[in-house]
Length: 193
Figure 1 (cartoon, rainbow, N blue to C red):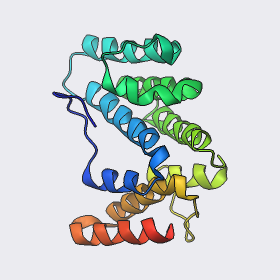
Figure 2 (figure 1 turned 135 degrees about the horizontal axis):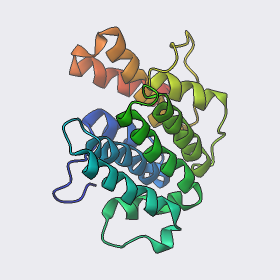
Figure 3 (figure 1 turned 180 degrees about the horizontal axis):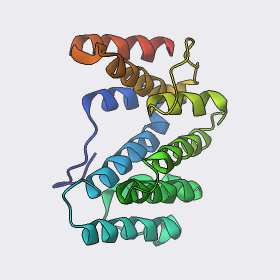
Figure 4 (figure 1 turned 120 degrees about the vertical axis):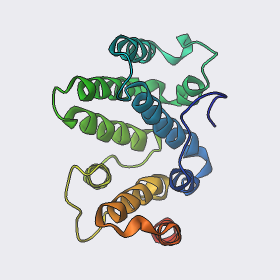
């Protein structure tokens, strides 16, 4: 659901992961993933540093005000409106991307901001935002070594289990086969691990 001319779109594995969330929570997942991609695109290497700062400032300003004050013409903002009570987590993602591009911390702030956004997403999905969510998020982002027993997440957080599983496959070199990835997604989607 990206805007025309928008270079942010969910990858096929991300689309499948989102499809495993209960229908009511899919827009929350899609908004999170699309925002992360939009911020990544805004901070892509080779862009003018001033333009990067302006784009990030625009998003930071949006998340500083209530969703009711957001401009109506931005489809991603419309998708993010349900995040209104968790705007601070989205703003932290903007700050994390900024810290990553200025090289302050090697991406640690961005990783932590993404984890906190996933904790906020769990809250919005009425799921426990506990250590299993934090651990699955850290493993997905490569910030923690994978556990031998993957965390079992509730159905509304099944996309995180799938994203974690695909990232671990890629890290181990098993992601070369699209069929293998599809089978892994189907297995994790059905059984949660």
